[in-house]
Image: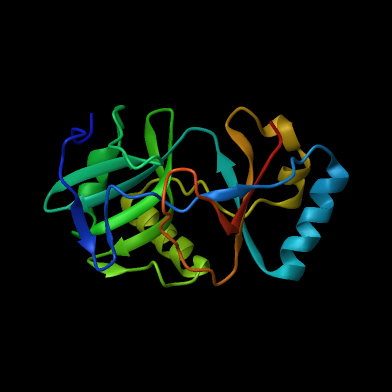
Length: 194
């Protein structure tokens, strides 16, 4: 289990404390055909989007602060389910926060929000993703969010149930903490096939 729901706010770095409302994607059109998937690959390159596969599971943010691991859900509440690899993250620098997904009881980060008390909120998405991938490598975990190859994307729902689609992130966009649990950003677009 993670921290109890009555835990006070946990400061991580300037402009970031948990719990908060993480950046959420706007729901885009579903990917139903190979033609749509091919067109998406062209648009991602043309308009400079970062594309990551959408891992099925619970969206959470995890932070390491003063020797403790704090995990919150996408609704701004403390996450109440077990995460079997949560203690691995204690080996990271203090005041580090990651955004990611819990899938089959394991936390898989897709972006770094802060590292060693340094905020990445104003950094472009490419830098946040690269820093998360670096930290995953340091931990010896598998990086789950490499940009999908065209053949993988053309598989559409054949990639289910582990993968539910893709998330497009506008290149160079900042990480914007949302005002509430229902707010969504136009800088991120979710395209599902299920």
